Length: 231
Ligand SMILES: C[S@@+](CC[C@H](N)C(=O)[O-])C[C@H]1O[C@@H](n2cnc3c(N)ncnc32)[C@H](O)[C@@H]1O
Image (cartoon, rainbow, N blue to C red):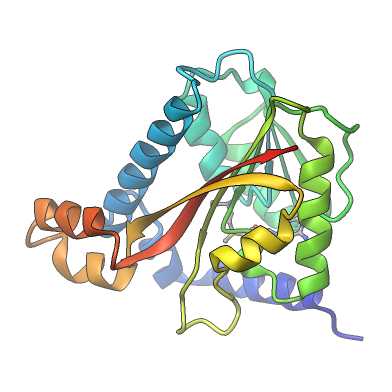
């Protein structure tokens, strides 16, 4: 039987070979750089509002870490490599991650069954892993595992994912209602972020500031950033 996880493996094998995908997600692409920097600012703002001035000493796990781009960002937030961990379903992506971040604890695992004890992490991250899963039960299982491994009562889950991406049948945007269902036992604080990438691609070479202004209006934003605190 062809499962959603088989579909995901095939899709990412295709993307790994795709030159246009590599160009889209390169920091030398101004539209991607803009989105990345805006997301970092929004993340730091949100963490600061939760009283976190640094992530030093925090144990952090990313579910669906791919080739480690997000973990690399978190290394800049006061953490050390020893306190970061990532899991992903796809060995090829993890091998890329090992080359990029030698020594970091990256493991091949399914987010539905995390190989960690309960309450092990101060911060559990998910950046666009959920939108790459189409099966509702898999998403529910992943959310339950994230809640299980986060430390209670002070640990946090940080969510960054899009709610709208009509052009890609291999992804499904996730609205606030679905986030609330997935984490129904938790307190959730959400904000919209990220100017929709098709708009950024058109405008950023003309005016970076215009993109910032449009992003701050929130109306044209394609993603949600959320801080989720298990009760
Ligand atoms: C769009 S990529 C995001 C990668 C990374 N978080 C980033 O933002 O650079 C989604 C990743 O989620 C992973 N993923 C999806 N479902 C998963 C599951 N059930 N268990 C582990 N990883 C999963 C995919 O293999 C893929 O690497």
